[in-house]
Image (cartoon, rainbow, N blue to C red; front, side):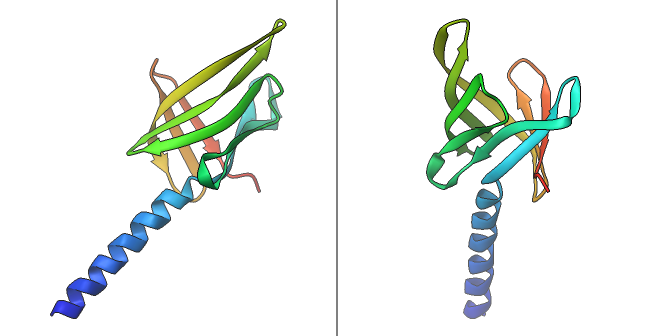
Length: 114
């Protein structure tokens, strides 16, 4: 009986690790008005982040706490560089889809590039 509980606890721990690691990697969405092209970000292990096809929005790091994803970086434009922090509620996260809800109610859907 004890072995059964230990086995179940190990499976639960592994499932939790898999869920957290699922978010790492590249995530993209179509560029509005140019749907054939994609933009997004890459979430690296250790909290590093980078932008995909976005020259003026430079992601630098990320963190996930519960169902909140926070992205940090720099916005470049009009001769200025300004730091930013974006926090989203994760509505969906699986192997192929990341759906984020912004604080102002917009939903952003990202997929893994093929």
